[in-house]
Image 1 (cartoon, each protein chain N blue to C red):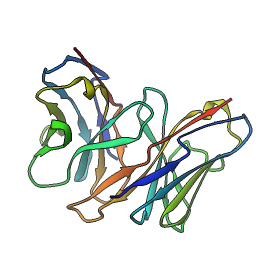
Image 2 (image 1 turned 120 degrees about the vertical axis):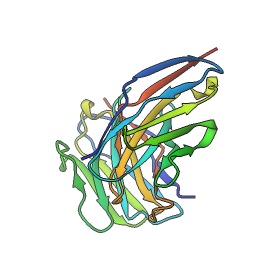
Image 3 (image 1 turned 60 degrees about the vertical axis):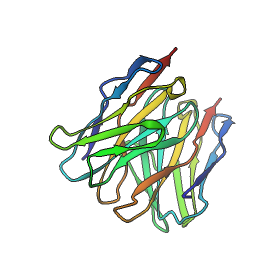
Length: 118
Length: 113
């Protein structure tokens, strides 16, 4: 249970184009979704937190106009990388809180999207 | 704000040997602690978590960890590793208010025959 399906798994795009990454919660309602970015051989850095029906909260240093996050429903959150450039190439992972009670609290993660901008 | 320190960036070990991956955290509030494993180009898989109760937590694949509040540590251990345990391991912390996860820098476990 508590699966987040992330698509695409990998994408190659040309510099200047936009790319949309989707995360769908398959068997639960994801009130809160987190978006992380991971550079090769590095840790996961939180980019933003999105709550269903409201604007995303971005971490310091993350360009909100470049990384557009939409969380219009309880089962779908999207990250759009606008006007992508080679430096945006990275591994992007979404995550949702599951088990909101203190006994079952945890997080589930999407399988990640490898973005390569050429 | 919380932070997590994983002092060992890489830990080489021989198959069937025991291993300990170290994790220390910093927080001014009560925390939840997690260990995740990541294989190349994949998402994260939960190994174990500490929410409350017994400080010794047992997880999947024979891993366990002990929460030590006085030393602010949550070290991961396995008594006998396999080749298939070769992966990246991340320690993470969140406060108990249903907030974001903060990750350590990761430890690469390299198991050789």
